[in-house]
Length: 303
Ligand code: SF4
Ligand code: SF4
Image (cartoon, rainbow, N blue to C red):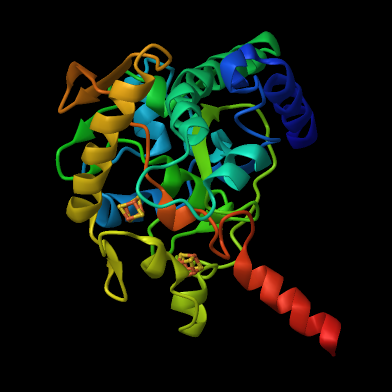
């Protein structure tokens, strides 16, 4: 069934108008083809997330029940969590490499338009499962999804993708997948019989060259305000530059950007659309691939 779901998503990404830049910016795709991974509802890692993300982070069963879906016998065994990786297009990446000061306009627009597209992906995937007689829901679409001021939420897509074996965390805190870290993520919980895609390891940093080999640190050099160091990623510093960029780019791109709403601490707010910064994700070894896997392949080929 995984292959069928992937074909459905590949078609959706190719044909959906929400995955398009405005005509004035060439009308190209925002995201290239997705990759998917699947975790199991009773994976003990979801209990671990209550420690590493926050006690308020929900398990798939808690999210399922909170969305008024039935808590049937053996539910945790049959639940599957489909995680979807949306990689930014080659065009957006190429136009973003090497920039300083302000990000590329097409990245800012893509970052903003991605939110409506992600919602559509999740809604259409839920419908896809329902049409085949299964139940489905999505954490991010739920009434209980909320962001808390300490930079965490009740449903972290990065952690859900990690659980599904799609990637690992890194020095700049992005999730490094097989198609890189310059991606957006979304997920759907279902009782459809998807095949679980196990994690290669539970090492949360296995794909990052710094954590695995002590090399690289290219993201440290790319960040203009020193928000990344060997100690990790300073979210507060990062947010300071993010807000500055938001002010400038929102003014410049105002007629094109879509309105942005967020539920913070349980309340809906209209916010200045986040347009991203992400200098640390462009032109680095993990932008569009898993750099550890690439190095391992290279050394195997030399032998
Ligand atoms: S640029 Fe290098 S050090 Fe930074 S997250 Fe990517 S792989 Fe890790
Ligand atoms: S998003 Fe921007 S400010 Fe934040 S760490 Fe990356 S380069 Fe630095």
